[in-house]
Length: 193
Image (cartoon, rainbow, N blue to C red; front, side):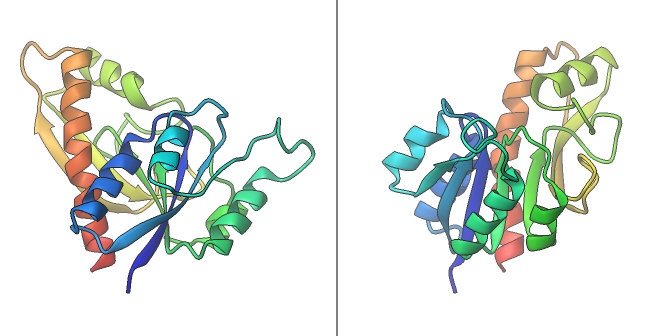
């Protein structure tokens, strides 16, 4: 049976594109059924339109005085999502969303967890800058379930890579993005098996 995936994204949703490509190439027996963003100008909105996927913009500005997480949870339930993937979603996931989808919300982190490179404020380039500043010899990608604490959910899989002696933040970011694409597909292959 085809599993339904909901996407939460704040910007361009490159992780979503990875999943969508794997679905089109028949690597994943799944379908992205809904995309939700908290950013009116998110690049993922155009992608959602181009793939004809329903999308919603849900944030405090649009829905003042309403519980945003509750609204998101109800929408994801309405679309019958089996899994939720966070594709650069820059908002903490609250308990009502976690309770509605226990061990079904998946995130990708651009470093090896558990480590000092996880937690609040540790995302994107901030992670790579810290890894290089500390002279690490390796880094990688962690795909994990989301829980109440940033980057502390159960790990689904990790992929690691060695850093070059002359590694820069940009070169590391490029390598991690490439590795992330592989890791996301492998994690979903594992989950959907």
